[in-house]
Image 1 (tube, rainbow, N blue to C red):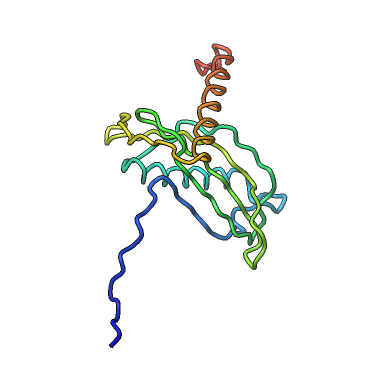
Image 2: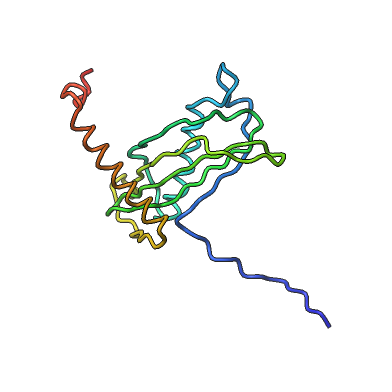
Amino acid sequence: MSRVKTHSPAAPMDRSETTFRFLAEPTSVNFGGKVHGGALMKWIDETAYACAAVWSSRYCVTVSVGNIRFRRPILVGNLVELRARVVATGRTSMHIHVSVQAGDPKGGELLQTTDCLVVMVAVNENGHPVGVPSFEPETEEQKRLAKYAMDVKEALDAIVELKPEEVVKGEV
């Protein structure tokens, strides 16, 4: 007699990673017929937010987006995949690496179009930063991405120091 399985336990969720997949729609196109960079940046922010919120179990806000580079265009009808991964944490912050790939959904290869680092901070109901769980890289890839995140953070901190005072004060 065979048994019918009525319930199968779900595999445990990797709380450090989030993937979004969807088709690029005509509403996201710029005048050149490609997905608008602003639409892509919105998708990156949304994916990073989902990843950070799942990791921290909190509402999160974007602090910075660094080292973004648009390598190739995304076309209407492309399958778009955004993969966000926690790669480093601070006391209240999470460094999220977002990689974007796109291509023909009818069997074409997905190619990397963009990647960047997004820093998110978990906040409480009053908007004040709160602690987040620590992320400890285990694999060699995770360790390389954690080092990359810290290197980018140092570079961005150095760039901030280069800003003229009137820019920092918002006078320009």
